[in-house]
Image 1 (cartoon, rainbow, N blue to C red):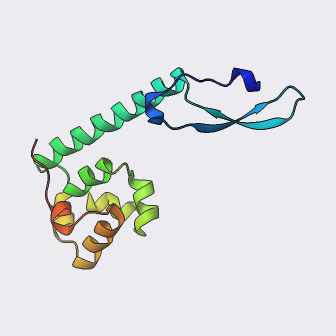
Image 2 (image 1 turned 90 degrees about the vertical axis):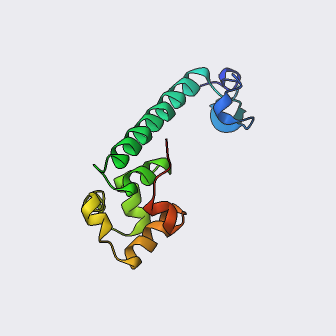
Length: 133
């Protein structure tokens, strides 16, 4: 992309910030250029955020019905998936999948609950409960 073609669409997802992109200047060299956003990128970002919000709402409903543990809701509400939560918490993915089952989650030790609290940056009471709809 040429330096003069870098999008400046004032994307609301940038929240007034700029993003550094690299573009080719007139002499053919790469140069850093600030961009205020790109309409297409903003649209794709909004679709992804809407999808994450939908997944979080579904997890809350399932957790309120007792089909999955509160961990599933809190994980998604803080934009983690099983792989990223495993990497951040030190649990294996298979362990987290087990902890998403209410009966297993209810038996977790204080040490394991605290690991989740530290990783998700929430209190013990918050992790063990769910917000009301």
